[in-house]
Amino acid sequence: MKFPAEHIKQWLNANINHRIRLYAGAALAFAAVITVVYYCRQPASPEFTITDQLDGNIFPSAILSLATTDEQVIKPVDSLYVGNPKSCIAVRLKSGRPNSVVRIELEGTPFYARSVSEFVLPEARTEYTVYPDIQWNYEALRHNVQAEPVSVVATVEMNGVALGQRMRTYSVRSVNECLLGYNAVYPDGKRKFVSTRLLFAAYVNEENPLIDQVLREALNTRIVRRFLGYQSGTPASVDKQVYALWHVLQKRNFKYSSISNSSLSSNVVYSQRVRTFDDAFSTSQINCVDGSVLFASLLRAVNITPVLVQMPGHMFVGYYRDKEHKDLTFLETTMIGDVYLDDYFPEERLDSTMRGRTQSEMSKLTFEKSKEYANREYRKYEKDIRANKQGFMFVEISKAVRAKIQPIGC
Image (tube, rainbow, N blue to C red; front, side, top):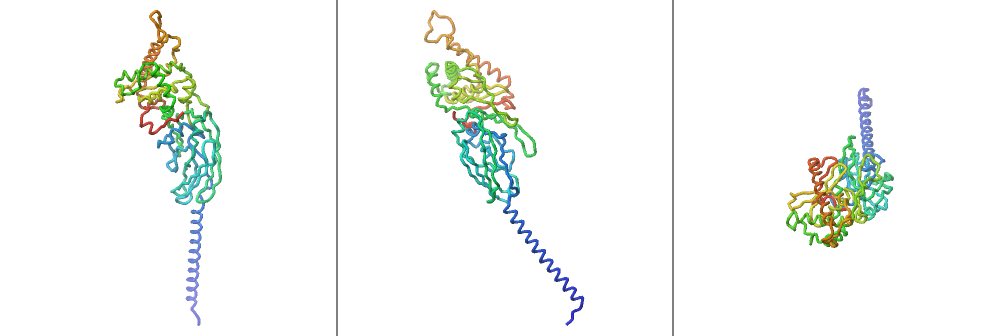
C-alpha cells in the first residue's frame, strides 16, 4: 500500500514535533528537579562571619545589668535578625530555602559555657544576623577587673549542611567600664551615635551588704535616730537623713581621685571607668561619677529616690525631698573630700574653753555648700539636662529604671 508523499510528510512532521515536545518537557522537568534540589539542599552561601556592634568588645557591666530584664540597650541595626541581641555576639549569613534551620555551636571560654542553639530563618536567600543563646559565667564577668582577650569560636550548620568553623578574638572589658555609647553603622552605610548612658544606673547598688555598716555608723552619730525615708514627713527631715550619710563618708575620709580613663582604643565605642560600691568603699576614693553612684546607692537603700545628673565632663547626684517627687535638690559629691575632719574638734572633746569649729559644723557647712554649688550648676544647664541632649543625662533611679537596668552586684 502506497501513501501519498504529502501524507508521509505530515506524519514525519507530527512525529518530530511530538518528540521535540517530549524532550523539551523532560528537559524542563529535569531542570526543575535540579533547581529544587539545589535550592532546598544548598545554602545560598557557604560563608558566614562572626560579628557584633561594639567593635569586638564585650562589656560585663552591660551583660550583668540586662541579664534579667527585657531592655534592649544595644539595638540591632538590621531588622532581619533572630535570637537575643543582648548576647552581643552574632553570626552573619544568608539563608537557603524558606524556613532554613541554622544550628550554631560556640566553644566554651572562661566567660561562658559551650552553647548550642538552633533558629529558623523564614525568608529564602536572605541575609540574617543570628544572635546565638550564650550561657554566660556571670561570676567570671563580675570579677573581671582588667580587659582580657578571648577567642570566640563558632561552628555553623544550615539544613544539616556544615558551613565550617570561624574564630574571632574579642576583648572582654573590665566590669568597671561603663559603656557610654557607640556608633551604629546601618545597612545603607549611615552612622548614628547611640547613647547608652542609662547603664550608669547599673553601678547604683542599693543592695550591697556594706550599706548596713554605713547606716549603723550614721545612726551612731545621733544625727538621726532612724532612717524612715519619706515616712519622716517633711523635706527637712529628709535632708537630715541625707546629711547623716554625707557625714559618715566624710568621717571615713573619702577623697577625690580622678580615675576615669580606660584602655579601650576604638572610634566605635566609648566607655568610662567607674568604681563599684566595693571599690569606692574599700579605698575611700571617688571622682564625680563614683561619688554620685555611691551616694545614690545609699539613698535608694533608705527609700529616698536619687537622680543621676550628667553634663559634659561632670556628674552629680540629686534627690527628692518629698514622696510626691516635686521637691528636687542636688549634691556635689566631690566636695565630700574638701575637708579633713580630724583637723577639727570632735564633739565629745569640746568644752567651753575651746574656740574653733567642730567636726559637725564643718561637715554641715560643706554639705550646704555642696547643695548650693550643685543646684546652681543644674539651673544653668537644666534645659539640656532634662532633654537628655548628647553629653547630658537626667536619670531618676526609680522602679521603672530598675525594670530596665539592674545593679551589677559588686
